[in-house]
Image 1 (cartoon, rainbow, N blue to C red):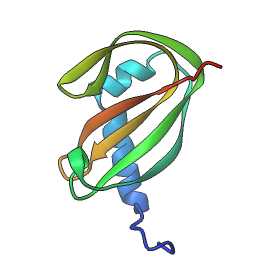
Image 2: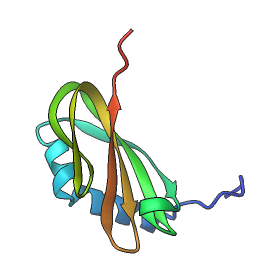
Image 3: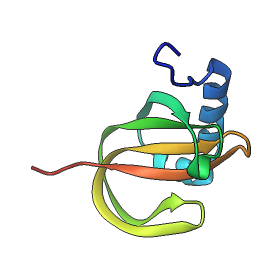
Image 4: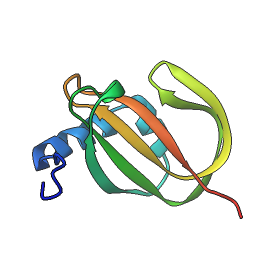
Length: 108
């Protein structure tokens, strides 16, 4: 792109969204909630590999999450916080979700 950073192509962005929306953990977190994908971007290195994507999914309101949150495919940690969305990281080469981060509402 103009900033010198690689950009996600439209087709790679569509692929990333499809991968995320087909992931059982993402589906579970979105179930029964209104939401909007507000951003998709490129990720490189770490679990996403050489080329990955991340996206912000914002809920229609704040939801209390209490239970085992699926941060990584094989790693869950107890979370008891209000969240207003999630950030999902996708490995495009392998076609899998590799990380999910909760957007925890900071209380004043």
